[in-house]
Image 1: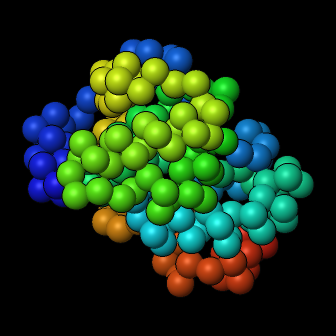
Image 2: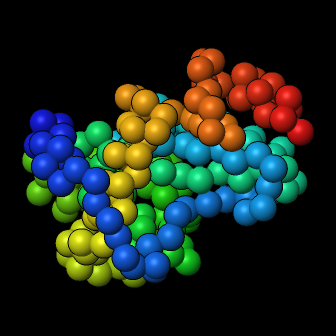
Length: 191
């Protein structure tokens, strides 16, 4: 599955999108002095751990206080993550809520031996959470697809992203072990 995804990325290369309706998923003060970028894959267990363990503390101490903002960028590692990324972008007014739900409940939808099985679980999960999304229309939306692929391409080209999660703080790659203590120390230096 990973090989197929990488072939798609290489085949399409850099893609341009023209639809302004596809918005970046952001939390915190949009005008904050500190910008955190999180490159993530929705099937990555370490990314799910980041959302469960680090993000709530980050939100409390830096995002809700207006000191920072975080931009969640897509770096799907397989087709299942690619489709889940597209789903998270389908309702811009609920994107952050959908993204957090997908990470918090990752084991509920990520099961299956084929992309079709995982898509079926993803579709059931989204419906069970009350998100009103036209699943087929969403995962086949070319503009959303291009948006997700562009995130991945930019991550590789601009920041040399090669694993998830990768954190970027004010355009500098966070190179320390990703835990809240290390992240907090780095952010406090920028205040």
